[in-house]
Length: 562
Image (cartoon, rainbow, N blue to C red; front, side, top):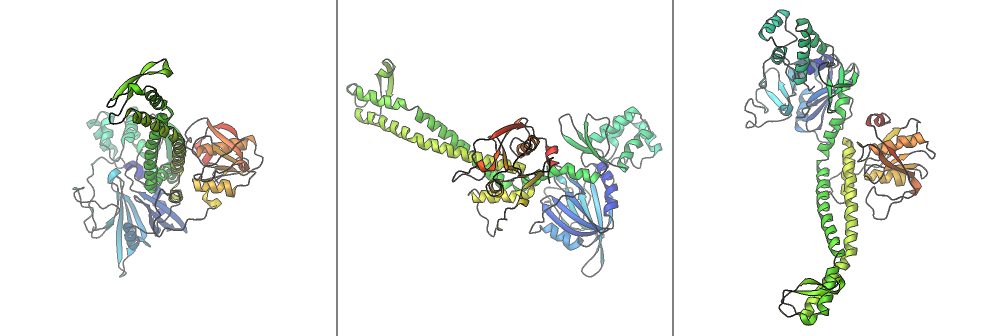
């Protein structure tokens, strides 16, 4: 279920109690499409997330911690000027559309009272957040300024008059009387036809309402369906293709499996969108990093293929030596100006071998040319082999960086950038802040069932620091076998089988194999770990390890996070 009209109706019944008459104390924009508004009410702070993300626009109260950018975007500066310190006087939905208006009361620089509206339009790729003056209707500013050529339905620029977007009219099920329902029932004898006329429903809601009415085509059944949205709860369900969806009621007529439920809708929304939002925020922040990694990987993969072909040619260059020997042995048969000659190959029972010749060279020079090419090819084997090893090592390193990005949280991306700058893949930015000192707070921290601690590096620089400097030499080190992943340290010198199992599951989860089953994980005491001179960050060698196969379960692992 998307943020359709009925979902928003449900959410506002909860938001109104918690935010109305609250004072707006802080505003910031952590990411391009997201705003965070902090309200102060009853000595408590309530953090409202508003997202105009085109894929899943949304709003709800969140406990997520966000970093406030050093430089505020223009829209945030405007919001701070007009709304900071104002009181929220009203929250209303435009009919059953996906538009929510937050009405504020504030005073301007002259002390005159101002009524302002922050309109949140949760309409897919047309989503926007618009601040306008309630008295004059003039737009003050908006999150996404739209060129008139891109939207001819209305003008979305500062100083233009605010107009509602074109809305498809429908029937409001919350205000429909029994008499009106009976008239509609006569007009639409098929329940599905009536469901299509209702406003604020997405596809799933229409199916569910149709199911209710097909079971009992009555006003009572109709009102039963709509009553769910006046006392909402949260239900997370799985589709047959294992996609997660959240509803404010428990649907009975949809082919889905209940995963979880929660009486707190805002908390459930926070949990539901937390993972996907994190991935999107990481994606936004890591675009430059990921582009560099992908481009370098593409170039090195091509280079590796050429090197392997070159090595194959060098290792199969015996024909060059044989051609030179045959030309020398049968030199009297080679005439100047010949382009090729067939000579008996005494290495293969005198079978004829065709040898190409340069007609501009003498017979002796043709033979010498083959010997030189052979020597050059044989001499290149060592160099090419070394280049292949270096290229494969670099590809493995870049693969580990991609794994870091895949497992990163928004605040981890800067550390990954620093790593690539140190390795020369990214240029040092001017006036760049000093690299933060590595501490235990930088790492992931988990508590096992036994109460023992597991520390996990988030990137290769942290992996090196954790394993080679931070960890006690008698603690145990865990890492997936032959696959990019985080270094994990179990802070214990005599772990039990259960400790090893749990620590290995954590190591498997923070690796490229996080979604796989039967993942092999190596473990060994830290004192057996060595780092070769000149090795890339995160690369270590070890011997004498033991291994265990585990299947990481995300929910169980993240429940252990300290």
